[in-house]
Amino acid sequence: MSSIGSNLQEVKRRMATACTGAGRSAQILTSAPPLAAPWAAESSPVALLAVSKTFPAEAVRQAYAAGQQAFGENYVQEALAKIEALAELRQGPAPLQWHLIGPLQSNKTRPVAEAFDWVHSVDRLKVAQRLSEQRPPQLPPLQVCLQVNISQEASKSGFAPAEVLAAAQALAALPRLQLRGLMAIPEPAATLQAQRQPHQALRELLLALNAQGLGLDTLSMGMSADLEAAVAEGATLVRVGTAIFGHR
Ligand SMILES: *Cc1c(COP(=O)(O)O)cnc(C)c1O
Image 1: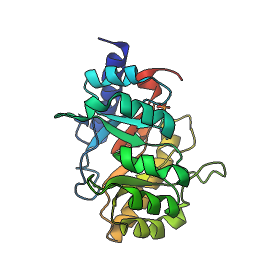
Image 2: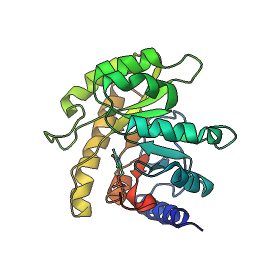
Image 3: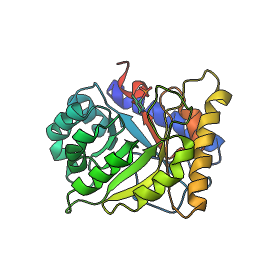
């Protein structure tokens, strides 16, 4: 087995162990499922998103051969080249799924609306409006998450927690987007307990939105270093790069 294949197995084992510890199903999905019932601790499944930024299309192909379907990219130009190089893997019963997780400038929305399945990093309404206008009518709605600056760091993008409800209501009204949930990149922390705190805050924010009727099912949170904390707090999409592909 390739090292990417064994790394994937090890990441899924870590996720499954965390699921079991949290009383969640230990079945790890390899792509993001379609919209389901609003998030609930006992029933929401968790999927692995393999973050392939800076790695070549060949690395994505190896991970796909090992059963992984969902891939996350940060840089639009780099991602578009890989999406094109691997276009044949978009056909068939287990299609590749592409997620944009990096910052998106409003002048780069068109190719994203045309080529991606998901965008996790919506941090301005203007970007959301353009994505909705530019999503081709023959494709399903673009699946999106609102990025939240959950640790309230000056250097990080994302809506402040207090802005999220109004932003979510505005996004939910856009016709060619399907608002699925919230995404965050918390400040690194050393202990499991400290890592859990921002993930818990994101989950509570999602529950507050659902209490207003938004019906969201997705918590995009957790990376190589803190995936156990994220899964314990209810992550449904865990974005893992280094532990699968190696150091960048
Ligand atoms: C790079 C990146 C990841 C993956 O981080 P690792 O520490 O390599 O697992 C996850 N989310 C976002 C937004 C990223 O930019």
